[in-house]
Figure 1: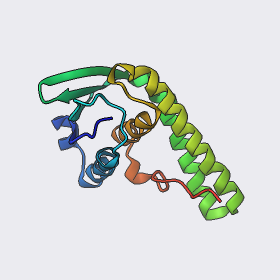
Figure 2: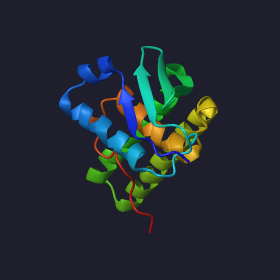
Figure 3: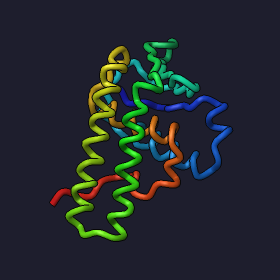
Figure 4: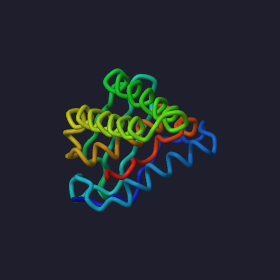
Length: 162
């Protein structure tokens, strides 16, 4: 298991983002850097992310250069993005107008959607040596890069299970 020292987003994406979005990126990156159980090769030191129109590149680097890389096609995750954002919007409405049973059900749906996205990424990110939990972290970052999560209440975290 590797502990990453850096997750770097390409300069164009970083510079095009306003400060609230950069904050979202930093939160997702912080979760990755703070997770000591990421499943990457031991020599991995950094993950470089390059956001394009049709793909997002993920490149693992070590002290001696590139270890592995993958391209995540936009079409491969678009359904997950749409589903996740729809659930978060429903959750926001339920928190304002409905009872806790509705909120709990939607929060569970959000967790399941997150897991589904991670399973898709698991297939794509196999060359990186990523496991399911690592792909959950990658999904969080990819979502923040594809969607302005600053406009979505409830996109971060889940309710504790009773």
